[in-house]
Image 1 (cartoon, rainbow, N blue to C red):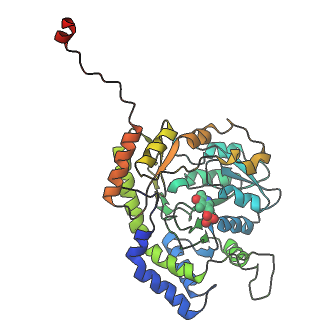
Image 2 (spheres, protein in one colour; image 1 turned 180 degrees about the horizontal axis):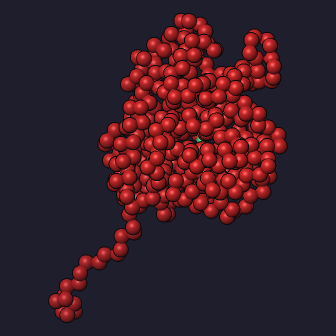
Image 3 (cartoon, rainbow, N blue to C red; image 1 turned 90 degrees about the vertical axis):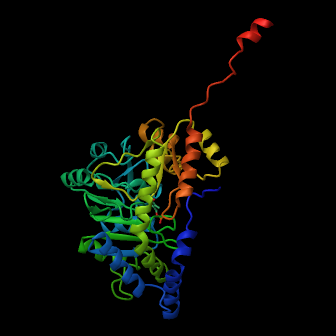
Length: 382
Ligand SMILES: *Cc1c(COP(=O)(O)O)cnc(C)c1O
């Protein structure tokens, strides 16, 4: 058997009629940008999250950039970002001209540590960026308390957390503004790039709406320089179908995770606090002898991956920040020990079972040398 890391084809086969109808609707209508499908999707996703405003943009990275721009963050400002994240979290901060100030993560949740985060606040800090990594929401209560105390904005990177919640509120609805990605393999994915910016602030919303569309409010009137970053109609039509499957697929992810956690209890998983309902974007576990384990899994046909093998502070593109090896021990240790197991919303039981058995075998302690018992009689005869 071969178990891919994700398999989007099953989802497509199950929903192909609705998906193709959605695409056909756009083709017949011949409106490709900023039309009805996007308006409906923004309304539906906004309602799903329980946020006032939701705007589709071209990618998750653009969503972060536009969120930061809308808050007026730029040159000379600092934004605190966890060192254990996908690179795009930091890239967005750099892109607007601000400085990403990296911080280590909590050894149990693998998420931004609010206490260390607070210790890095300076007079230049304008915002913090909690990343709900692997689909586990950060402790938003603690983060909002620190942010309010120091008058900072909170930009949620919810690119892995579609449908996750913290104390009953959806990830992406709690901070001042949030970014989602609809990259095809995310819990809610398009058939290409896509993203969204969500907020409850009318002021931020109005800026986001213009920033994604050349900075214009009415055609050819530009109050400020904006970008071209829209979620197109075909992607919006696809996302409307996929949004209707999100809860069901997230439930399936949760039940697969329950099996993984139960059967692989000798491995260390991300700790889920009682306040959190994760979206289970990735199943990340720590293993000893990682190279061997990955090799064994590969031989068994199980495609495991690493998220992420190099923490942001050790990336070449951030050399100029002057960080050094050993500076963020938790992120560094995780980057050497973690693997992500196959997990997706349409994975069947037989595949889960196969992965579990392959992992059990690959992580079993070395078997001791066993020699047949010596026959005492034969021994004395010699
Ligand atoms: C995917 C992702 C992004 C970027 O989204 P794109 O749509 O690929 O630009 C940003 N942050 C995190 C945590 C992500 O997982």
